[in-house]
Image (cartoon, rainbow, N blue to C red; front, side, top):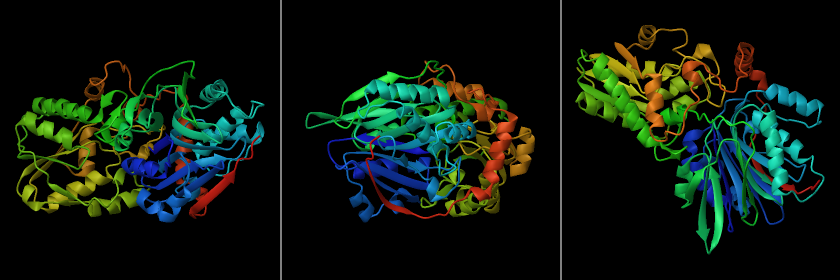
Length: 504
């Protein structure tokens, strides 16, 4: 679940892209990268492992010259944690193209074989994003002209949509042409477009979430539609076109549960409002089914669950308390690459305030329960400071199935709810009672913000993979590739790169 941004401006964009990536940092903390195009039509690239503030120092920012650029923060799903897998990627033919991608392709191996044997292009990493870039490049290479028209670009993206499967929201640049952005025909991963007027001229920005636009005073125009492509020329001309033959809009519902910032507007839905409604739905369920429980206090596991927990406390007429103190300098444990890393970080991330737990029956509220690692550690912590009984409520249903569309849940046996009943899950994590949100209620909570959305991508809850190409053999392959440490490449920083436009 990465974060992407692209800006076409009439002034240097390096600082703007940096600022946008910092507010998208919650979407990926593993690596970051920025590419700009300077006045000589050279790509200027900096990418490395780490947080945005650590990857980009003054000397790097000074090298990232140009009025057009794209940026990426990585959350590793496919490929390895090596910096060579960090984005954006580039190819120098045709024209010179660079791309950043949020999502996950489900036919990567087939595409990789096609690239190698049919169009004879070399892919240098194990990243599906580099495969996607080469598919786009091979389609653009079919036009025997140096100056691409908007119709050429949209035609190429239409072929990409026919060829690739899975989830993808992309931003790319073509030397001497401009910026392009496109979204898969199911609209699984989010993408928005905004504009601002500077000295009478319109500048454009695309990003994973609207909060990135807000930070830079861009006005949110709308979401990029499923299957739609955006082309913004270097001089600021905007072109759009629907580039998919069949649209089935099913955005990822887990964005609203966990990933997105609450101040984002996504697919016409306020993330904050959806989480309030999740709390209302879950509170009503607890009041109906758990009315015999002796609950003294409602405490959220920070911070995504705070809005839902407040509504639950209101409905149950119980005190709401902030019982955990969070160390804000430790990353989000769910998106850390590796089970042992997640487990070690929980105690460094949270500390229980004894006065809120000692001798009390506590209802903890979390946004979701994925692997159970964090939940187990937190329950042990709460009991160690004297809690009497510990109940746990999840604002999301049980996560029983792997995710193949860009969320780090690719292995079923890592999921605590896989092949377990609710009582078995409760015993595993050590709580006295455990309750989950109903999937119908979760859908209704999000859908209320935009009733035109008829379906959501809910595969982690119901096992329905909407692209129709997911088999058990594919899931087994995904599991095997995840554990294959031979995929790790040398981990060296890419300090700076200048690539001359080589034309055709």
